[in-house]
Length: 180
Image 1 (tube, rainbow, N blue to C red):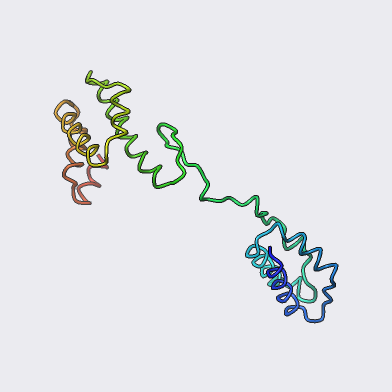
Image 2 (cartoon, rainbow, N blue to C red):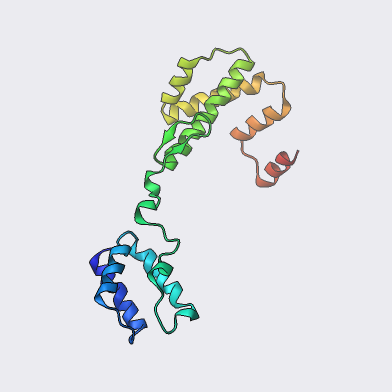
């Protein structure tokens, strides 16, 4: 907390407890201790304390106000969180990038499984190339691959599922398909 924020906090306390003596030592001690906390967190906690009947005649002690408040260093900066692809565990700093990669990664894993099942040519080099494709090129490749799987599969449900990707059904029809 800054010096100005400490002063604002004590103006708030003095307005709430006009007869209470906030001496210089107390203010100095509080300022030193509160420097490790966010002003917004402390002010919110203080407001919660003041709403308690226990503190109608005297202000809450500092320890009560900061009880269970995270110190600034302990707060999580969500802009610095690392996200990992659920399939390949590749790290990302941005959640949207991670989701976009997971979609591609899931599709590539499907291509890999089906290629092995039908003895189609697939190796690590092809896999890496698929990750490098532009969005449009990958969509074209994947659409063609799904059409090939649809022709090759003997599973009726898989043909229907692939058909539904290209021709999405109405909501009722989709629910009926999922229930079967």
